Image 1 (tube, helix red, strand yellow):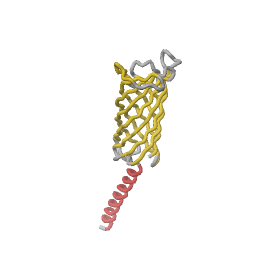
Image 2 (tube, one colour; image 1 turned 135 degrees about the vertical axis):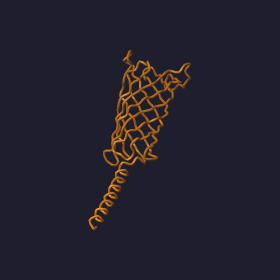
Image 3 (cartoon, helix red, strand yellow; image 1 turned 135 degrees about the horizontal axis):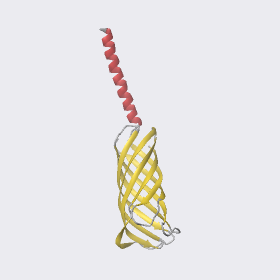
Length: 195
């Protein structure tokens, strides 16, 4: 009888210990709170814009409102040479507000989906031409928690936007284009996130 009671107590204790360990792992891999992310990668334009694939970088500030959902405010930039006129170089800059949804909260490896809205600016310095517009962005990726406050990740992203305004000259005003120009792009980004 004492052996049965001892085994029952041991089973209850081990269940309690595993629950505590599981809760500590979830806290260690928590999504809640302030985050800062730096990304490096490449971006390619899908529309016929005469732009080659270019190097890209991003800096984002986020806040995890729950174990699954984070809000992000991010800025990104990329540089691109022209396919036909190689002496011209263009740079794309964007400011985006997005929401990220994690599929495996509390785990070390967390796949996610992302959706956002943004403003996009394509500048060609040599011709002093700037195009601007807005659109949506989405992405899929995964993050791996290395230690409590540091994770690495990778993301494929797509940006679906149109240029609706143009400025010629550094001090000129933006004028509405007679017809919107397509500016869609896609890319890959590696991220380092502090949280």
